[in-house]
Length: 101
Image 1 (tube, helix red, strand yellow):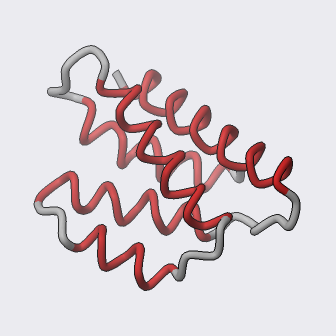
Image 2 (tube, rainbow, N blue to C red):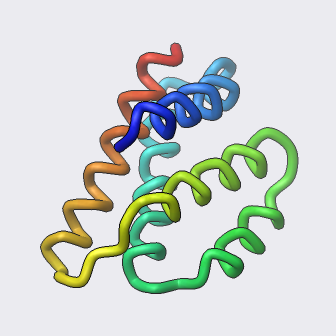
């Protein structure tokens, strides 16, 4: 993942995680994985942004940033590479969240 995307995640996750319960980073990274799974499986970005827009406040803004970051990553053709992309995105998001605390 590029350093710019990681920076955006740090900023976005930091705003969500500040007043969060202890397992918030796990929830945030789980959301990131779901978004990347959707991206890898060909779900249109516009559909994902509609879902993100249905959330309100900081969580809605965070969901939009996660969606943009996921769709800036390449889409892979094999199941193995799709799974790896989703796992890496999940782990990078979790790391950014933990560092944001």
